[in-house]
Length: 329
Image 1 (tube, rainbow, N blue to C red):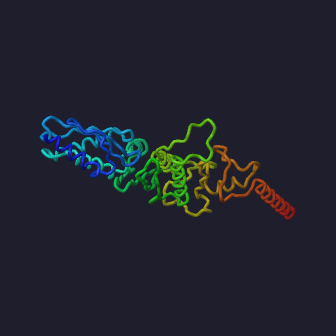
Image 2 (cartoon, rainbow, N blue to C red; image 1 turned 60 degrees about the vertical axis):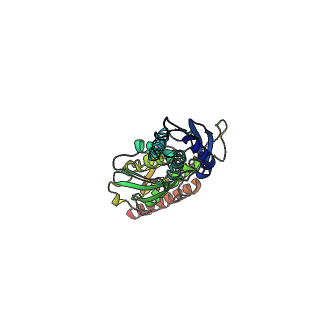
Image 3 (cartoon, helix red, strand yellow; image 1 turned 180 degrees about the horizontal axis):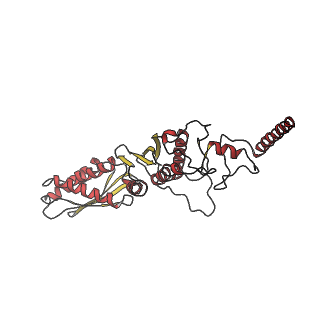
């Protein structure tokens, strides 16, 4: 019996029980083909080819996958062929398969490698940081703009992208309430990537789960961290945030406290307070930038009540003016 025949006998007897999620597809004097499955998006096929004068010459490995990026497949090929060279003169196939499975187990982000590349190339600027912890399935992202910053933690599970990315704030010098709003909006965008809408609009294609890391990172970095430090108040047109983050007020009633409304525009508290209490009130107060109705927990009056309070204040002012005129007379 040849060396390859002996190894094939060992493979047929031991391989599937030695490597979790492995299925032997074919074996021959020329090659062994297997499928390794971890999750729907973490599966691959190995075509392991015997060279001439094996095992003096080492195995050649080709990786195929419908879900993994091309560069990840090339990396697995390099890792497995490097492992085969360590076993020159010995059986190599079983150990090569174990190494491939180990790579799937220890690298949580292989299915989202392209997303992470896009985050680094499209969203991050000089001074920003991205630190990946593959085995933990998390990465820390720190982004800055004009002295303002947020440190965010993104986490995924094995079944990503079927399950959405989790995000939390680990540190920031943005106002506390505003930073919490950023994260809540990011979480909601993440949820929409995997949960179909309650009502499907007529004519729209069927809902499909989509990766959530890039959309969430794009919103938090581009639309929040990089945008708001230079955003203008939607009423007075002055910069909403102070130039020095140390001067940010956390007093929710402070004149320069930054108010965020659901259309994503921002205001100084004093500007928005005056605007919300000044006519016209019919149909509710509208954002002066986009025209959408403003809903805010600090200003909950109905248009009718706001109108009545305005009329009452004007009547009181006229009475005071009349008394003042009489006293002057």
